[in-house]
Length: 188
Ligand SMILES: Cc1cc2nc3c(=O)[nH]c(=O)nc-3n(C[C@H](O)[C@H](O)[C@H](O)COP(=O)(O)O)c2cc1C
Image (tube, rainbow, N blue to C red; front, side, top):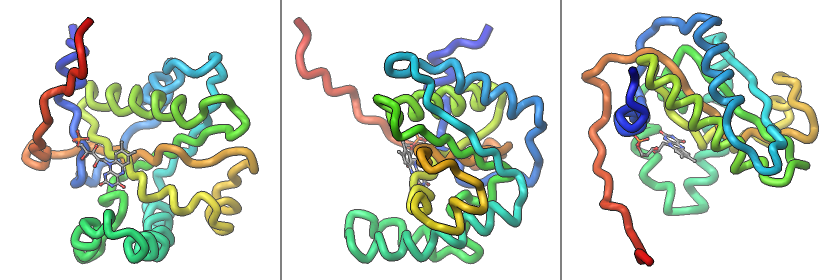
């Protein structure tokens, strides 16, 4: 049996993917995992857009980049992304073969938290199946973009919360990261 703590600890944000599609059945399982997330007042205010068309994924990335550059100019906090984006053929989705956009209904009580829960469920389920993922918050810059909203037929009351890149990967491409020990403010 899969140990959930092992799955949680071994999930890493993957930034290099194999050119290997994810089957429809597998994607359906991941969406199923997302749907079972908790949500404020059980509103389940999420919707999913699944993109597997490489040209469309590229266009999503290409259209995000000018907005991201603008963001970087305005806020030095994002300066680290400049180097990452300087790579030849850079894609904000790291050439993942699949992107799932988790969108939230803005009229729901806590749609951002709810969508984050759904996204985490999906990423953990993916990890348990040997599929890598990366939450690409950078894509949120397209939320008010006319082309994006029209092309993907996004209903007026939905906003992207969690753009998730998904794909198979090689073990050598799993990043090593450091975690600080938890900051326990107080035990009572
Ligand atoms: C809200 C959010 C936004 C993120 N946006 C990006 C992003 O735009 N690009 C990226 O490469 N990683 C992004 N990440 C991934 C984080 O960089 C990553 O989770 C963090 O470095 C810890 O690494 P780990 O996921 O392997 O534990 C994002 C993660 C979260 C939760």
